[in-house]
Image 1 (cartoon, rainbow, N blue to C red):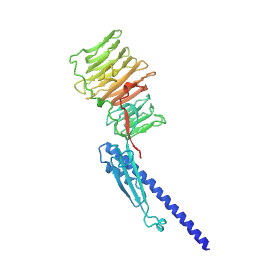
Image 2 (cartoon, helix red, strand yellow):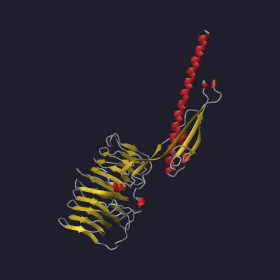
Image 3 (cartoon, one colour):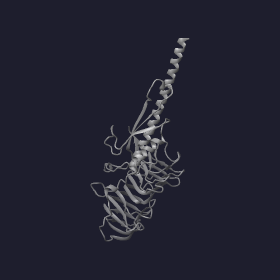
Image 4 (cartoon, helix red, strand yellow):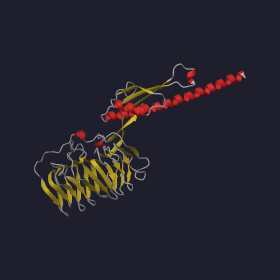
Length: 401
């Protein structure tokens, strides 16, 4: 009986200690989740200009473990230890919890202390060829039964609940969708392996750092409301084209910068237009009259932006709209004969891109206020080495330690 009593005591004590050990591991896991959440919230708040200490404290408290309390030991930007000590974007969060448990307290005078540490920072998340810069409204949307194939990601800086809105009957084939706000997409609208990143950090305007401005010369109009009639063959040269330029015939655009001063750069379905090393700048003196683009389906259009050697100032820029913006929308539509190579940059203007069966572009990057897709669109984003210095990546907050 004595041996049995001793054995039962040992057995019960071991079981009790195992139970308390399991509880400590549970607290450890819960505490790690809390500091992970706190570190991520701190980095996100710091990036958006808010108090990262308050954000970290709130998230650690919201994810607190099931003990009598959690004590935050440290919230530091940058971290005080580890591989990210020199990273000004990184935030370290450390917390502890401690509480006596019934069985282990018979053997321990002091409750064990459970510690957890997390470091979060900003990381790059893929490359994007479609970026909507507007901080409000629907940044990117598909219309009707649009079939859009992107060889890159699509991102919207809008902070609303539907920053990216994909119609239920449309299809957006993209590896990444990033938004500051929410993403409204069903499984029928995107590939199963598409990575969605809602409520992320804004993408930095990839062109703004170049400080491009609308040229002031030439001041005189090279032509006014010029219309190249069907069946007409002409060669146009860089200059200031005032109050619209309509191309209906066979047109060669010589290399250089074309200033569209008010009106519309319009290419009709009868036109055959080619040009290499071309930049088309859309401007005006008020958002109400800033020039826009209208490319009609059926036009035979082949335009390429200048390389760095052809024009270091305007390299890779195919269309540049005055940053003051436009109250009118630009429209690009085309089929298999539409070939555009370069960057369409409209930071204050909206753009609708309508493809057609067979439409394809090897290197067409779109950065606009808001962007809509309709029809069948295919953008491979296979840009050459001339684009290697262009940063069109998204930023996300990740736990790294």
